[in-house]
Length: 537
Image (cartoon, rainbow, N blue to C red; front, side, top):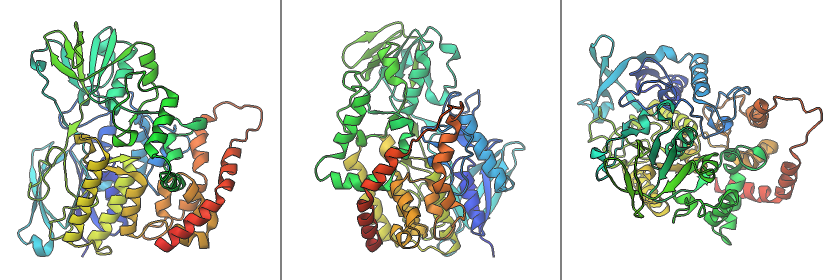
């Protein structure tokens, strides 16, 4: 009998969850409370409480080749760093190509998810849903559940002294859509994550003055790296990870990164440099912030001490009066209000899950969180890999380790997070892209074994080792193997460069000489690394 799977949410994680269920012969039913797919990437002019949404101007911070789902490359015509309208278009193309929308029940809210009385033997779940059009409720039984509701829904509102008495406008970035109402205003933006940086830059063009308040400062990364290449395609490479581990014997990786970042602009001079190292915080990606600071339209300030009716006092004793607007870029609190806390309890954004997916204490591994991660890379790709793993667990093709081993892994990961990252609610679900994808793919059986590839397809092995760790690597072998993966890897730079070629130059260009020389110089390292990899695998 075909097993049924409830998928909660039809956003960036829910769509591949549905597809992976179909791929494995399961029967998914996706519940989406809005009338559209795409989650926060579906822009709406009016804020909806509990429903996150990007700003009108938002573009993604990951390049398209690193962002796409592993068996459906983003069209070459799309820009490298896609605007939200392009991402939504891609989601619809993906859903239509694989005929996913027929599995989605729109305007249907999940009210409760509860274990059935015989859960210890059946692993089944009772789910209550509400039709938001008619108001009707239903109770359904499912063999498994995938929670794909994301972690950008409920606003985190800090309790600053005097904030309630402040007479100006207070807005959370959750509710910020576009800058039209902020002309000639004096604005304080609190928080220097990606949302805070984006809002500050956008408002700085029309506001009278923007003050960017930060507790710790931040290392600011550029999305564009050397020779105009996307930074993620340059740094998310197995070869670079290998070299970094070798070089760490002589020099700390954080020193190298800090030096590179300060070559772009001196973070201390711009009042941005934090006490912590670059890898101790989720990166702030912003190409324009230093330009707005040097032009004076954005002024960096320390943390807020208190508010008055008309102004803000900062922790260094400085005071700015006549403030019109305060924008809280202070993040989100995530949780599962429809799920019993005995299954998953979230405390201050801390959640204890095996592989950021499975509650270790469940007698049956029939419930998983998909996409509840903060990744140094694309969450789309990781969510898809998590969904691939879960579908095969439900199907019975993958057997997870026992409860004790799961808790051991959870404890190890949480301890590593505490050691590496500064204390913050945003660093409780942090993962590194390649390491985490490799962990998941090894469990699932679709890990790209370089040692084996070196013997059967050395050119492909070299491309995977030296090139960017694009999602196609995880479709090369094992369950879910895609016949187009090899070609996608060899043509990824063509798709990346295509949207830039908008004017004929009238002469031939050779942009690959440095790359070729680099590959030749490190051929020996490749051989050594692949041999080591082969024996470790």
